[in-house]
Length: 420
Image (tube, rainbow, N blue to C red; front, side, top):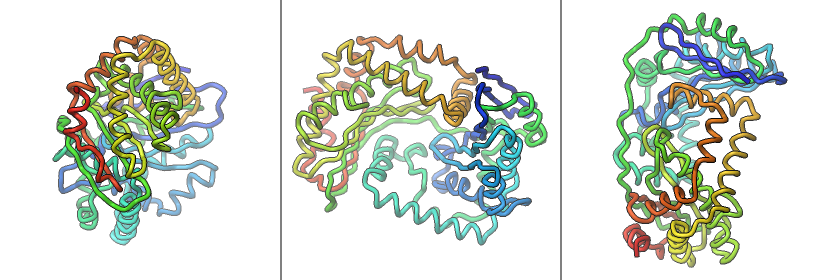
């Protein structure tokens, strides 16, 4: 498998990876225009724009967009995150050119029909309502807001109902003009693909785009804080986060290994101590997420209102213990889990494509898998303990609680407990 890159004169970037033996391919365009690139009055518009991309172009209506891909057995979709919006398709090798044409069409020729805007506005408002009714979903939005208050990176990707209710065709067009320049786009493809053919077609589809000044995102500032919503639910939901390294930080892989060992699987400390030994919950896990310049190590659990205090305090105690006695065997197991997850995931061309685009966006190049595996293997037990010690001593923290959480300790009490 060979990674190849190219850049058109206007700054449009292309990265491909041919995967021998496959008859299918994944192809998509990743745009550096996510939630953290929105101004306050635009909150939710990147996600709204993603929805509208499939509602019709100058050459295809909404049904024709879907039929163009599904008539050949493929699928097309999109997503919005805080740092990117992605539009992608999966097709057989002979239909790669068609997929590129459709994706280019929805990006370059959207109609933004006012009638379709109203239809999709209603769909998104339903999506916002559904998220609000899903405790183990909405709590992460609250946690993000607590970690990064009054910042674009801290706001919900879906947007607030009031904002979404007011977006117009002009608002959508303005966001495209501000953020959908050729040098903000990365075309990534993996599987049964021909690099030269993709570059040639990209030149015809995107080569005439005019570069524009990039509207970058403000630097993230993890402040921390707490939100608590007491409500009669079956479960008390807890989400606790600590500031962690971003993608480009040397300790990025240390943070990943730490969270896997702490709460990344059935053998992890949190799962064994809090669920298996004490039966305090059904779900508990830890994970580390990263952005270009910041990150969060997050712990989530759901339990009864009567046991939320014990679970929360035990979580802090387990973090303290991990900083003192995390074993080489635990670290080795976490490294193995990370490597296996990475390598097994990359057997899919869709996962390969995602990785290619994100690596180009973050580092401007695609590190070899051997290099990535080497970085994971280089994480030592001492590194993990030191990282854990920082989390339970000085790292800023954020807390979100939802449900019968009246008895849960507040954030100051948890911060005091972690150093007591």
